[in-house]
Structure formats: structure tokens, C-alpha cells
Image (cartoon, rainbow, N blue to C red):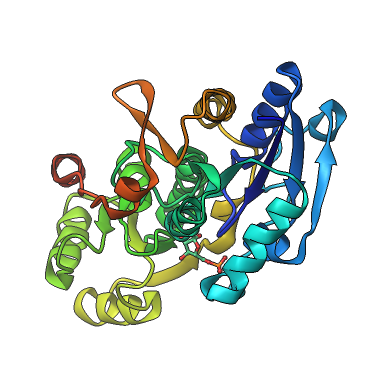
Length: 319
Ligand code: F6P
């Protein structure tokens, strides 16, 4: 294999840049020509492909986002778009492809594999919603951002004796709320995997007040109910002044954590080495403290299991 390309797709995540750096440098170390594709599958369709060198990835290991740009491509969902993407790889003589992203990106990688493109997929999403890997790159950086927000909210929550709702991302997965709620010491977490119970939330606020607790932080996963509706229900039932913060895309940025940089570098390096051995159509995973892999096909069909034990611990510690 003489030419490999890399692209980033879907919602960006902190850690994509360290993966790009590792892929580019590993290729150059092994005398492989490496090409960057701009803005994900859209760039592949348009042939927006350029050759990279050692300096292309200088000074990016500490940067959030992706220097290649990312997109959620509608055109790539069509057969016509997929054929154009495959053709532009062929036109550039590219034999191997490394794709970085989440679920949707992996489904795209699976399609390319079926067209005969030798593909490796690396899990990069803040949501940690991919069942085949313990962690996705970007997740812990995002959790750190949420923990920081919880700490700051707690200061003002105590000063005013309020309840504060913090809406976090996660799409259909409660892992950001679960892990940041545990590590940040939130009083309540609301996740899609557990039925929402307004009385449970309110009873906790009321019993906290009775013990003289002045703050109450509720971490709410997006998409379950509007944080403003939650605020209305809490105020109606408890008469406690409540405020809403929607953290939004702040969770997607920032310098990648040490853990994210380390697994990013390991996976980036491994992706190239697998392609060189002609081991392809694989999705890399962080499992049992190791970088492992399964087929992309199996990765996209694996089901995410919610960590109920962790949820119960949050419940026990936030009495
Ligand atoms: O999948 C990552 C994610 O950040 C989700 O948590 C969130 O629901 C979504 O992307 C937001 O997407 P967009 O960047 O299109 O607003």
C-alpha cells in the first residue's frame, strides 16, 4: 500500500487532531504517502483531497476540533454520492482510508468497505454511544468540561439557594450526564436509559433543603424533555427558584484530555499498521485497557449497554 487518506466526519470531538497527527506521522515514518480529505464524505465526493506532510500536523496535538473539517453529508447517503466518493479515491490512487467519527460515520465506512475500499474506522464522538468500545475519543474531555460547569454552577446555586438544571449532550445516550454527574457530585441526573421521574427529582431537592443544603444541581441529557419544562415542574412542585443552563457545543471543543490524546495516538498508529498488513474493514476499540478491533459491520450493529451500576452509585452518593 502506497497511498492512504484520512477524513473526519459527523460531530467533531476533542481528540480528532491527535488521531490525524498520529496517522500522518506513522504513514510518513513508513514511507507511505498520506492525503487529507476536507469536510468528511462531502470532501470525498467533491475530490477535495490534498497531500499532507510532517509539518501539516505540527502543533495540533493540543487542539480541539479537526484541522480537516467535518460535515454530516446528505449526498453520501445516496448511491450516486457513494459512487462519486469511491471514484475520487480511485482517481487519486488511494488504496487505504482511515475515517474518524461516530455511528453515522461508521455506517458510511461500512458502505465504502463494501465497494472494496480498505477502510479502518476510529471511534471519535463525545457521546460515548458506541456499544463495541468502552470509550470513544473525546468523551472524557467533554466530561471534564461538564464537571467544570457543574462546579461553577454549584457556587452560584449555593449563593442564591437555587436549583440549577444543566442540559448536556449525548443524543440518545446518558453517558455524559452519568459520568459528569458522578464525578461532579450532581444531586440528580436524568438519562434516556432510565424512566424520568419528576417526583424523585423534587423529593431530593426538598430533603436536601431540610438538611440545610443550599444548592441542587440536576444534569439533564438533551432530548428527554425541555429544560424549561423541567424548571416549570420543579418550581411548581417545590417552590424553589430554578435556573437553566444549556451547555451546548462548548462540550465539543477544548484541548483534548490526556486520556483522549493517548488513545488517539495509539489508534492512529494502529490504523496505519493494520492497513499495511492488509487487515482492513476494521473498527478500533478501547477494551479492557487495550486497543482492539472488530469488523466495522459488527461495530455498527453492536448495542450500547447502559452502566446501571454507575447510575445506582450516583443515586446512593447524592442522597
Ligand atoms: O453526536 C455528537 C453531538 O454533539 C450530540 O451530542 C448532539 O446531539 C449533536 O452532535 C449535535 O449536532 P450538531 O453539531 O449538528 O448540532
